[in-house]
Image (cartoon, rainbow, N blue to C red; front, side):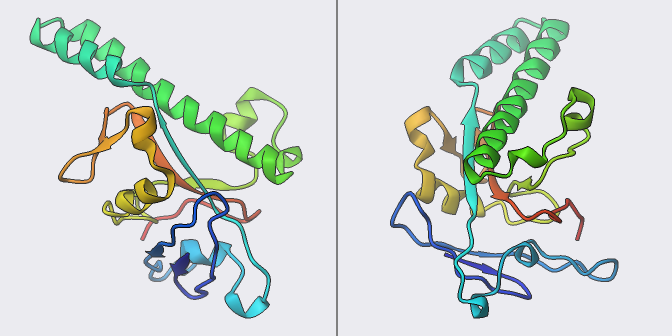
Length: 182
C-alpha cells in the first residue's frame, strides 16, 4: 500500500493481500501538513502500520428515518436521524479505541470522558470526503481492503455510504497526528 505526500511510505495491509494507493494533498501554508507525514518514510526500512475501519448501525435506522419523514413526523425524524448518526460515530470511536489497544498505545488515552471527548488520545481517524482526505472515491479502496458489504455497507454512485448512519476511516497512530484543513 502506498500513501502519497512528502514521505510516501510503503505500508502493507496486515489483514488482506490487497494493495491500494492513497494520495493525500498537502496543506498550503500554515504547517504544510499531509496525512503521509504521520508515517515513516520508506527509506527508514521499517514497516509502519495503518488501520482502517468501517462501521454502521444498520439499514433499519435508514428505513425508520425514511418512514418518519414520509409520514411528516419531522421532529421524530430529526431525533431518530440524529441519534443514529451519533451512534455510528460512537461506534467508530469505540473501534478506534480497540485499534489503539491492539497497537499498545491506549495507555496514552485520557482517563476522563470530558478529556476523551476533546480527543486527548493518540492517533486520529481520517475519513474520505473530509478536509485532509478529500477524495471521496477513496471509499472504493477502503471497500476493497475491508469488504464492509459483509456488515451491510454499500457505496452509491457518488461514493456516499449507505446506510447513511455509517462511517469509514483510515486510522493514523502517530502521536502528533492532528486534524487539519487544506
